[in-house]
Image 1 (tube, rainbow, N blue to C red):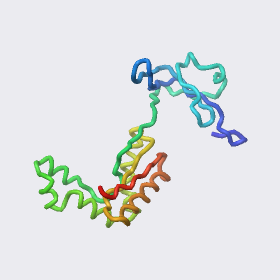
Image 2 (cartoon, rainbow, N blue to C red):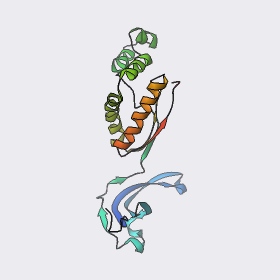
Image 3 (cartoon, helix red, strand yellow):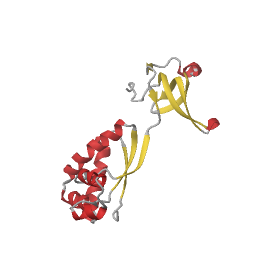
Image 4 (cartoon, one colour):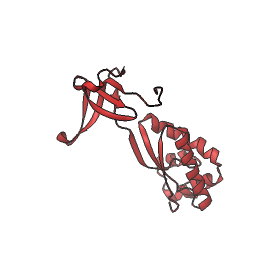
Length: 182
């Protein structure tokens, strides 16, 4: 919500349970009955509702009804963009098969390489988006996406293009990493 000048107004999110880092306790703690004062796009203050500074007391507020507020999660090592499905391999491992047996049956990393090379960018994107949506539902806000299943320049670049598209299609900060020698 913006005012007539295009600026985002000040607002307070109150009645929340907020997870904060607390150096005094060498870790985190939960503050219940807490508020977050937002000034434009900046978090200006966090603390107990009762301690809300007077500068924010007249700002529009929203009752979070005791909901938990935590910092966004960062997943710093993912391989989200790839072709194929290796669910059968997982079953084989549960049944006692080793990697050599799985590879002889056509599975293993080379099956992912083959499927990734054969898939179009749109197909890779369609496979990746449900994985992304699951991470978003868990609170991930920043994601590093590595390539690595193409094992040739064209396929690795294709994977990285898809990864960057994800960042335009979902409310997620995406950082890409070329990992061609996976």
